[in-house]
Amino acid sequence: MKFLIAIKNTKEESKNILGIGCKIAEGFSADLTICYIGKQSKALIEGDVNLARKTLAEWNIYHPGLEVLEWAFNILKEKGFAQNSDFDVDNLVEEKGRIRMVLPETTNYQIGLVLREGDLLSELNKEVKYGDFNIVIMGSPHRKRITNKISQFIDTSIFFVKNFNPNWNYKILLCVDDSRATKRAVIFSTRISKQFDAEITSLTVSKTSFFGKGYRNAHAWAERYLKRIGIPFNSKLLSGNPVEVFVNEAGEDHIIIMGKAKGNEILKFILGSKPIHTAQRANCPVLLVN
Image (cartoon, rainbow, N blue to C red; front, side, top):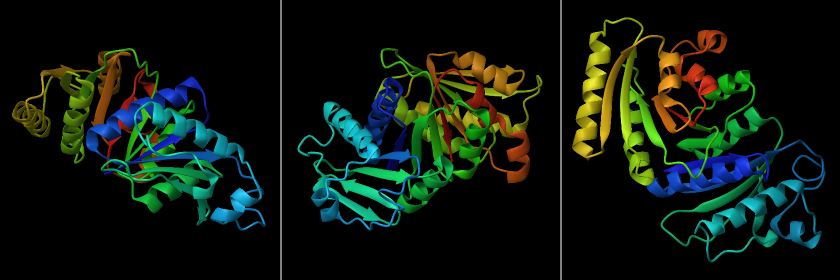
């Protein structure tokens, strides 16, 4: 698998995003790319200078984004990744509007660093398509509209890391319904549960006291799968507004995992969906599985 961690600065929030992202990627033995998307400039990517690997070192050009990547690289080394590597500008390569550093493969997965410039959504989408990533791990946008756009238009799983405290023992709230992505969400939850030693609560919510066949079958399938894998879990069937129930049940000490919604893109853009509204309103990390 291939995971992409998008960071925006060198603050504590970005450090926490790197921490949880590295731990999840390790559990999947996934290739891991750290991407910083900076503001558009003329000095590096879109300017008149066509940089190659050697010219970057020879001209000693130091781009602010490289400082962020070097900081992220040092965090990776602290966490046991890329132990036998160094951040060396000689290893930077320009290709197709991005700057890339591939680190030597010291484990059974590959680590990479990428610098892009421009609009966050556009450049993130380009990087996902370029690298064919299975999941994007990033901070939770402060503006709800941005969360909506990223959830809809980035065609892969999205992990919004919100209010993550590395000192907490997180549990997993697995939101189960009859959507097509639910089974993949259940499978993801077991891998993350093992990595964090986290108990799972499998939760299905109906707006009324009646649970249709689709919901009941999905809930039963999740229970069977969790039992077969041997993951400790609780199981709940609750009535009410699904988003409100998800948010209240999760609180701040859970990781919410749920399938991405499928359907009419225009209606989702205007009205949103349960997963999008949950990601917007939750006070904890939320993984939307594609």
